[in-house]
Amino acid sequence: MEIANRRVGTIHFTLKDEHGQQITTTHGHDPLVYIHGTSAIVRGLEQALEGRSAGDRFEVTIPPEHGFGPRHPELVQSLPRSTFTGEGEPAVGRKLEAQTARGPLQVVVTAVEGDAITVDGNNPLAGRPFVAEVEVVDVRLATPDELQFGLR
Image (cartoon, rainbow, N blue to C red; front, side, top):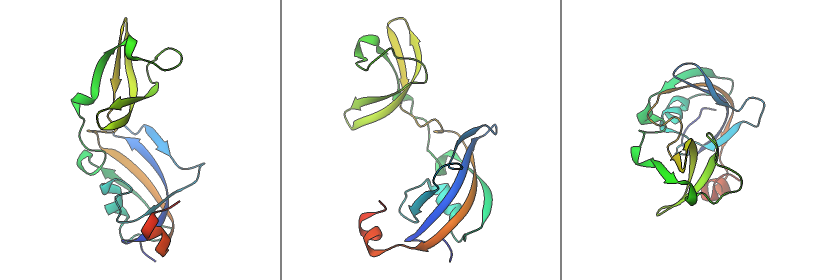
């Protein structure tokens, strides 16, 4: 069976940046299970998976416009340390949840200088291409419940 809209794909993947540095992998963990055609994964990867079958292995380079989109400079902000209400001290690399007018946003502390904390709400791969090494583990029909309510 081939991956197509409304089918459940199970994949293992490793993502690498444009310099070949590994960013994340499912190997050693549970594979990713998703319903194809629902925008559950980035568009470029979904397009590359179309028509693939269990056992297929491939590598694809995903450009920013089909991956995590452009960087948004407005998501990088320098804030007074007094706005930090979390436990412990803010440190570079620490992930925080910021409250915005559009709801919660996960940000990463990118600098701590004196009384200022710089945070970035962009995905680390925003504005950058990445390489996906993919193995299709399984493809199956989605159940009516999965199509109505999503995967659980």
